[in-house]
Amino acid sequence: MAKILTIDDAMFMRRVIGKCIRQTGNECIEARNGREGLEMIESEAPDLVILDLVMPGMDGLECCRRMKEQSPSARIVILTVSRELSSIVEAMKSGASGYLTKDTP
Image 1 (cartoon, helix red, strand yellow):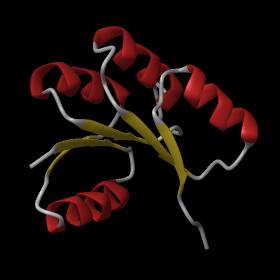
Image 2 (cartoon, one colour):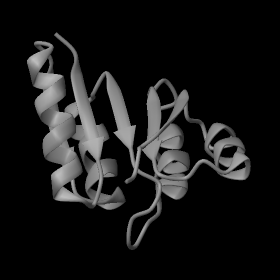
Image 3 (spheres, helix red, strand yellow):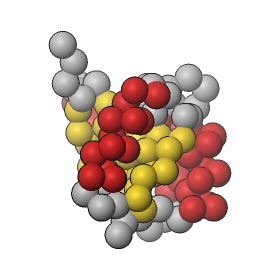
Image 4 (tube, helix red, strand yellow):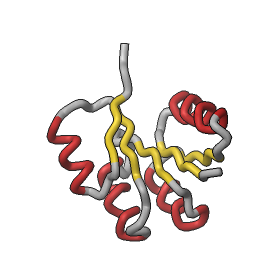
């Protein structure tokens, strides 16, 4: 069983992602922002982080950079609405392992 940390300021997204993760038999822990996420990566040692880019306070890119400094082996997947090539490039430069986009109506 993997422990997956979801970091998103939108409670609805955290709940939907968490439900999907738990349905696969894995554990999901949640953080509402980058600061909480940084604390949890240290205390919980998740196997994977699913991280939104657009959050108040510390954005996802800064959070990703700090997580990789704290835990260089962390696997981080960005899940965001931005489909801009520049966002994808910046996320990968920040240490993300992957980049997925959310579909919006």
